[in-house]
Image (tube, rainbow, N blue to C red; front, side, top):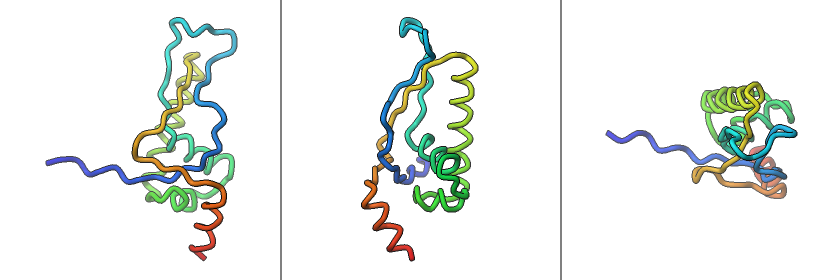
Amino acid sequence: MSPRPVKWRLLSSVLKSYFFRPHGVSMAGLEVVDLKGDELEAMRLSFVERLTHENAAKRMRVSRRTLERILYAGRRKVTQALLDGNGISITFPKYVSFVSRSQRTKIKRERR
């Protein structure tokens, strides 16, 4: 029996950099943590925009429980990278799609 397919997630395209490393550390021998774009988006919506988990999940078009799992995975990766002095690489899996600012406004109006 095959696993359930991954549900598509909507992300905003506000990212300015796709790789971070500790200051003063060379790339040679640097361990890198792979942070997925949906994990970063979940953290952005929850911690920067301060949305409730329910509203953040609606924005990403996933369930609240899925958002919580994504948040947990993202926080764990970022915390571990900071403590161990690892680099953070942000990647975008094939199951994400991006929404422009004008499209986000349109989606908000449709939901009212």
